[in-house]
Length: 370
Ligand code: ADP
Image (cartoon, rainbow, N blue to C red; front, side, top):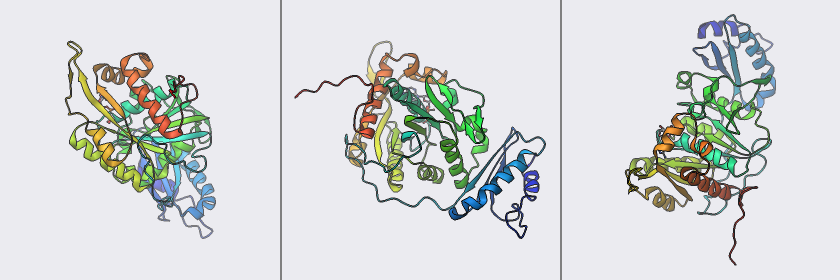
């Protein structure tokens, strides 16, 4: 099964009365066949042509699916024109609620929040998973979408494998990860396939994972973004109706420069920054209790103040966090009352307050001193 086989099959699909074939139309883009013989392609359209092209997309998908050896098809309509730019962003003042977005972002889903980082390896996915679990522990209905096309790690972090169940045509069931609904690009494609994706493909993948997964009613959907601030990330930030974004950074100078780029990127697409999290901050020696600041300290807090974005908290560099996330048993799920879970819970509570302007539905009562 090769790309040429797919193109040959698609030449039998016509797109107009003159009999122009889809393969010859110049509208086919990003035709990819992955290692398990799943085929992905997009059809480039102008947004006004969507209704006319939907039956063509469906026919093209059926044609490819009928080819011997094909194990699955993922065809989408894509427009290279991005969504129109909303009004310039109003960055929220530290501790204050983000400006409200108008209209429901996704039916049934109250808020979609991106967890992003300026570069890889800062603990973005570990933070996204544990934050999602901590939000769930507050009584919120939570989903987690792993959109890290370059290295989807949520299946590993949650110890999940296998393929999501197909409920009906074009509707996938999310997996269950310790009580939260989980979908990962890693369940759908081979990681090496994703590496070669370009803008339109990225956009249709994220759109599909948002719209064609039975998320049900959610208070918050956390999106684990690909690290970095390149075109793919920008496309994704634009294609997702985000309520806000969280930036994870380590205390190192370099990571902070990258974090700054992350803040700039989200501001460019008018997504409010809900806060910066400093990961791998303090190291407390498990033997003697001495606290060391291996990568420096306080940089992210100072940077957040400089950028006028909220600082959400510090997560220590900790062996338990590393061992649990690498063994598919996230610390907030397996030791919900431990000191690490407490850190994530506090950050999650602050995040939710910045987002929704109030405590979570079943959060512990707050003592107000008048
Ligand atoms: P990213 O998503 O930014 O690439 P990961 O979440 O995959 O980063 O984390 C990279 C590595 O760092 C993993 O091995 C993870 O277990 C570890 N890690 C992340 N956060 C911490 C932490 N606070 N303490 C110790 N190890 C951590």
